[in-house]
Length: 589
Image (tube, one colour):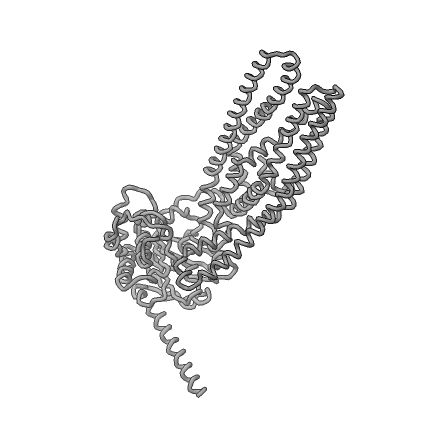
């Protein structure tokens, strides 16, 4: 396929990147469909000769001999050829559609899985990588794909034109070369704008979608006008890029259409001249006109779809870049159920996809059954530490260990069954409440465990008051529940399956007093069954259940130890700080 030829020359010894290997392997898996489509294209190209042969025979034999029977048999043969051509063309389209579906089955799941592993806060294009993937898939089953498949057989029509007369062959060949030259110049003229448009489009759409999600806040804060202008300006810049590339493409496309019509007329005129000189027959005159149009048609079609071809090429590059970070398919040995011992060894981690260090040389250890409270001001690194504890993010240096094994050595799905995680931004998904609590396990016998988790989070009674109870369907981002209700359902999800390690990031930020009491009860129950609990919080009341405290400041551990000792030190520091400020005030007075 022509879509794979976009790569540039590179040294022979240079190995392909991980993303290119995965992408090429997926395309090779679709090779049977592409090969069959290529064979059908060859047959279609041969059948395209049928109208020319029919014209040749009608003018040279039927009219000259008044052969009605010959005309009838030739017409039947032409009808059969055209019907076969239509059947092969439809079958080729079906083959390309099947190839697109196979590519989706081969690579789509890997792309989705990689999107879960991608660093938070990545570029907008990676966030909408499925759109890029669908752009490429649409290209390999659309008109541009058939034009690319037809292009290698254009020399066949040039060869037949040469067979009719050398001057006709030279005319068609020269026209094809001229069209290809103009097409290449047009591609170079639009390449930069098409690439820039492909880069900007995802971020513009992502910004518009985010504004719609938070439409209520936009209206309440009086931001509707300013956000409308901002998004409108971004769309205007995007449209200017798109329109500029479209105008340039239309300019070259118009030149090619003009040249193609001129060449067909020239073929007709040259054929007439040769017929007058009796160097060709009148039938050859008509056949040459048809052949010249057929030889140039794929080039015209490719230029007409040049923008889609450029988008497909840019989508391919984006997919390869996205897959470059995909982990190798190395099986993990099945480790035993964790006891819950946690250890940080000089961990260094960045904040999301940025360069700022969120954690610097953080070290501490917890025994199974201990509750650790992590405190610190906003931006101290608490949420990053929570993500590292559950494997949602891997450290840039150092190691996070569970029962002595590096968390990277665990299979994420196997480990996840023993982890409970409540992120700071509650992440509920489209589906029923039961689905969300059970982590979309889909097992029919999970009812008792779902109810047990909801009871542990103190949310069972609230769920029963909903119109459909546990079968209540939530919208995106948990739409249909209040912030407090969503947080309690997410807490139930973290408790599902009685995990050995429970990590709660600001779990009571939206809870009332009843919710706080349920949270404390859930933590105490987890500790009683030997689970290790880590809670990040700004509220001191919830720390009553903690065994140890860890104080973070600017990504570094300031204090770590028993709760009472750390709280005593913090009170002393607060008192001393207050005295110093008071003395300073008197001195200034």
